[in-house]
Every structure is written in structure tokens, then in C-alpha cells.
Image (tube, rainbow, N blue to C red):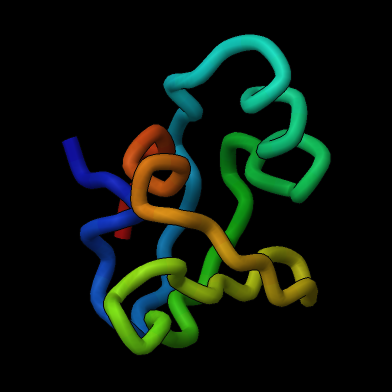
Length: 74
């Protein structure tokens, strides 16, 4: 399984599934992380976390714990 936290900088990926529940799942869905959404990996923070993603035109920062719950396809 490919995960969003493993996608290299500059890559364009497609969300396959979100493996979270409750409020975290609702937050991710509200941010636009839905099945089929196109995501661009922009850059990582100075210490490697968080990572900035372009999701449907919005720049979103996710920690690796959150990004690891999103499975992707290239």
C-alpha cells in the first residue's frame, strides 16, 4: 500500500482511501481528502514534519501521523 506520507516532494498522487475514523476522518474529508482527489506534495517542514500538500487548490499541512492514514495511487 502506498501512503501519502511516503510520496516524494513534487509528486502528484490520487487519494485511494482514508484509514481513520471519527473526528480525524471528518477533518480529512472536510479538507478535500476524498477518494479520487488529486494531491500535490509541495514541501516538508525543516525537521521533516509537517508536509505541505496542495489539495484542490488549497495548501494543507499534515503531520506524518495523519498523512500515513491516507492510501494513494500514482
